Amino acid sequence: MASMLRIIYLLVLVLAWPTVASAAPRWFDLEVLVFARDGMPRGSEKWPEFPELPDTTKARPPASGSAPLRLSNSADRLRRQPGHTVLLHTAWRRPVGSQKQAPWIRLTDAPDATTAATLDGMVRLSVRRYLHLDLDLVVTREVEVAITEEPVTGTVAIPLAEPAATPATVTTPSAAPAPAVTYTRVRQPFRMIDSRRMRSDEVHYVDHPAFGVLVLATAYHPPVPAEPAEAAVPTTVTSGDGDAAAAKTTTSAAPAAKAPGATPAPAATTPPPPTKP
Image 1: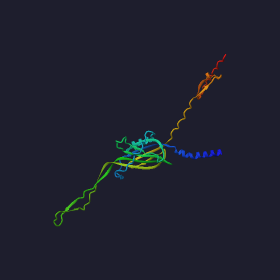
Image 2: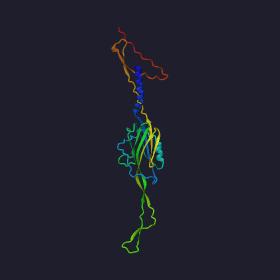
Image 3: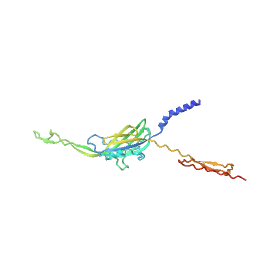
Image 4: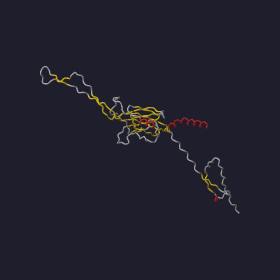
């Protein structure tokens, strides 16, 4: 009977182990590199002038500097490449949970609230069966917008056959001139909303006509704390005649490691107590 209960207990532990293991938080280093592209072509696409902005009031700061930057070479290449500007390059380390538990992390290039931000938004990394990345970013760029000026239609007064109080005004059938097109520079916000499945240790590229994002998630395994060394245990050594007054207290310690080739020192001996006359 006892053996049967032991088998049932072991089966319960084996079945419960995946649940216990999945409950432990998984740690990841998340690195984000955002860059803007200069010189967007005129009239390439139509964008809303005032897009709805992401709600970053509940987003947390990224705690940058807590994880290494592994995309530094990519950032240097982008800085050297004409027409590209690195807006933000940061990384942080934190435990990653489900989508309901994972917080949004705020991303902005403005050091304080008084500076106009070119980049503002948030990112979220969660894990279900796979890693999932959610992005909601806004990049404000200066672009050239076309302004079309419609020509004024010419009119001419034509006298009638019979005298009238005022001449009639009609439009001439001549061809109208082409509208004049001029360009002006304005600050235009561009919003990117993206959600995708990720793999750890792989660089993912999220593309947008106005900017791009490089994302790298790397699994992090916290170090296991070392076990503390055992403390020395005091022991009492008494003399051979059992005299309590002659008792001596010594401290036991681990034996020292013997160096190779060294000759062991002779053990110290305790002289016998004097014999009573």
